[in-house]
Length: 329
Image 1 (cartoon, rainbow, N blue to C red):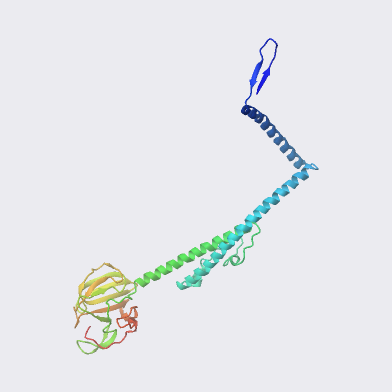
Image 2: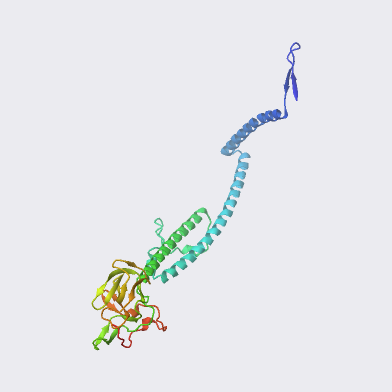
């Protein structure tokens, strides 16, 4: 496209050439400022009309605002309902977790009064407390404030459940440690020969208290620790012969007497079932066997009450109390 511009008969004509792109840019350069100006004028007029309450314009503006607010409320309501459903599902899971945690707490030996100490704290502003009764009902969410309150309750219950599970884990760990230090594993595989209690002394023939269990076995048979602990002593004794003593904590000590060979030394850390010595016939003994004792606070106890396994005949060791005298001390 070309445009000829002439200013005088004696002067040559000026030619302006336009491409389609240059025409489009020129049109945009004219339209955009006009649109901006018209929007500014419209905005100023609408604001002035709404502020000064012009009869017709102000009514139209208020109608448009009401429509816009209604749409926004509808959108928020739909999203609020969707979030309330999700929160309700999470709420139900937390309540189920609370019931499970309370059952597990009872199994772990945690008393109800201990659980009450970790109930969610009361709201200082309202002065209310208790076990979150609202969480056991269907959620009623009418506003964002209600949703925030429900989420806050769920957070409190989640924190409480986390504390309960931590306490349960701690108690179970304590029980596991305690079980590891209880001498409940038989030190020698095989039947018990002579039990705890009074019997005829094999040397004097007079009644005497036998303070442990005798396990007859061949010389060199492995002797295993009945529980984990620390070697208290591993030395020779006039009556017990080569004697190993293990300290299991809480005042519990086990003795392994008449051994032919000691495989540990004082201060060694021992795990349950570890071989610590070999059966022998040292000290005051008439034949190869292991004399096994359990002491609590320095007093000999019946080891059969601690042993949880069974002997070779299938009889529970805990039931073995009195036996026929055998020539082993």
